[in-house]
Image (tube, rainbow, N blue to C red; front, side):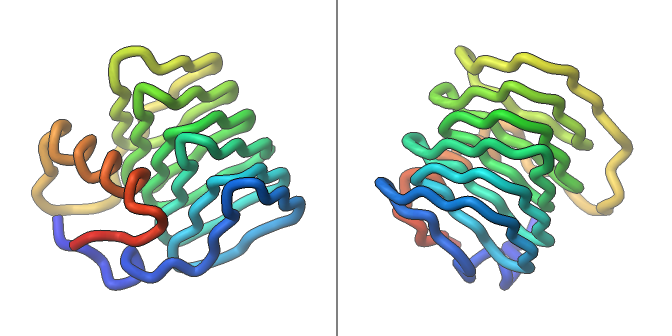
Length: 142
């Protein structure tokens, strides 16, 4: 699957030590390394870093990568990846869920039909991309 140009543009960052409360409606990438409370609607990626926390009734994105703690419902049109350091307390809806060993999920998981056509990347390749995104300090790699 090709890298989408919008995936390389970091629209918003909530840095470590920062607390933000509100609503996001964006087209690019949102990275949360601090504490967030509110709703997120994105056509791109949503990343919750290893030290990030998000409390939300609704987090929607094309791709969602969780390395920290999320309380709330997640909906992705393409993929949700949860790293071993991640936890989700809420419902998950996505065509593809990838979870490393050791993740904590408390909620319902609903796998829906994929709307995107094309070749699927392997689970390991997607997990490696998720790890690089979380460890990349907000900078996406091609």
